Image 1 (cartoon, rainbow, N blue to C red):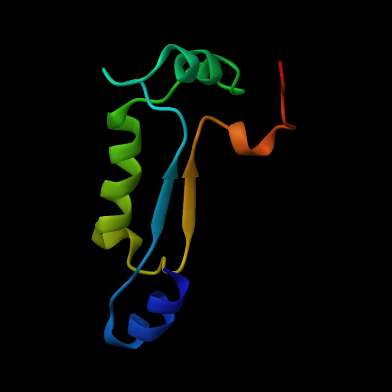
Image 2 (image 1 turned 90 degrees about the vertical axis):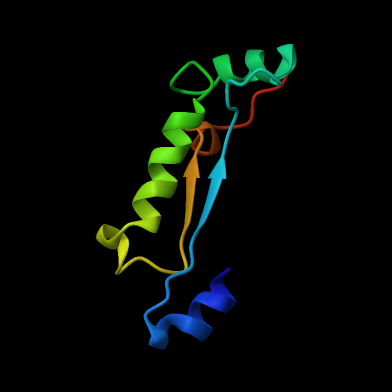
Length: 84
């Protein structure tokens, strides 16, 4: 993603990525649901919440954002690892 962002930036094309955490869907396993409860926010995200970030990055409002990874995981990545 970053290499492509560098390659196409001069043509006005932006390239970014979204890394979602646990997302509450019909296919979410009980273990994933439980892990979502241990995020700092205390729950799994929703497809709509992930979609909002994607929609922003695809919009003209993000025209100066390129080569970035946006982690949408309720703060899970910033906390220390938790094990059973």
